View 1: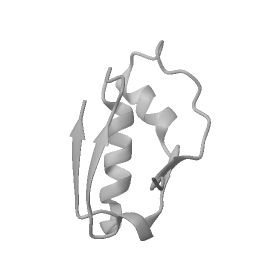
View 2: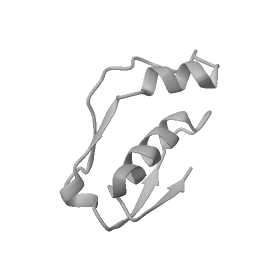
View 3: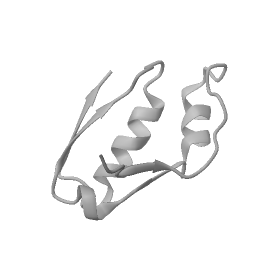
Length: 76
């Protein structure tokens, strides 16, 4: 199965980062999307460990930015 989202920045472990704004700051620019695989598609994102939702939100924002995906559904 192809990977349409890749982590491109090492963020380290976030388990001890409790501040949502700090998590968002750390995750900024951490992922890249292969638009050829996602453009116009509906994407389902699974998160195996949902704490604050910051990682899932960062991925969803990236997928929706500029039409990289038509719709994004999140499953915790």
